[in-house]
Image (cartoon, rainbow, N blue to C red; front, top):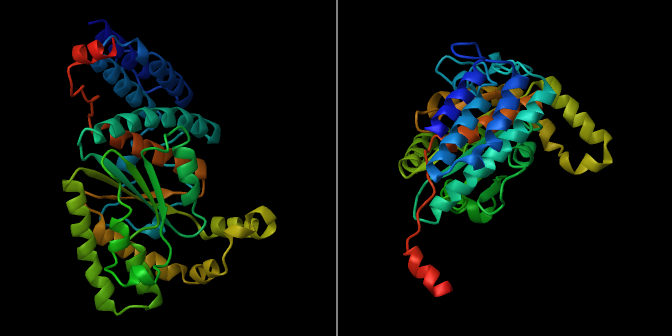
Length: 338
């Protein structure tokens, strides 16, 4: 009863009192942090999980509308109409977003441990995050910031480049299947199997019938993954040409960033419109209820990182996992220890 009262009080505070409006970003973050600090006060595992869920809800209250709702691709959405410099659903500034990411990453770490624990007990629950975007859209920085408090044991990151000779000797999904998350793990793909549709289309390296057939293969592949317990979050980081140019010039001017620059990036930039058309068709054909696409404005990297953090945290939270029980007699184990 006491924990129920605590949860009701937390919810009322987040709304500014009974029936009140959602409070400002700063206050919502303060309440969420306070709720997280109180989680250890729960007397039972169930109470602590309930407090963690409520804290996550408080954290989500900083958004005027959930990113999962605002940014999900729907038929009729045009990639070229997305304002890359916008911050939909977030009324705070960069400092607020950094604070949000810091708090959210601590909760991601908590849920990651819960997910991993279930994986050790034969649960197939796992998460696949697909990051796509034009060059310099911030894919690499997402992992460093969103998982800043995560445990490397349980997180798998893989970047996909052009397929090598061995990979070309197999079906295009072969190299992807090798990098999928194990039970209880989170896998992050920096680029993915979608490159094997977009690149051949833009550059004409394969017959049209070959890359067109891959759409259905990808849909079936992702549908089977989802049915087997893998949550799939597909994110396209939408960056403007002006912002991309700024990052390219920064890489050319800074000797510590020369390694990031590749002349082929400019070849892709010159085919910008072709890439936009190709990705538009990808979203229209492969955004499904099992594996939706999210188009995330990325000129403000603090915003795109906050969005990914929110999507990941709520994805694992909504799995409604609990800590797996002992699969042995604890009294017998205590006797052995004595």
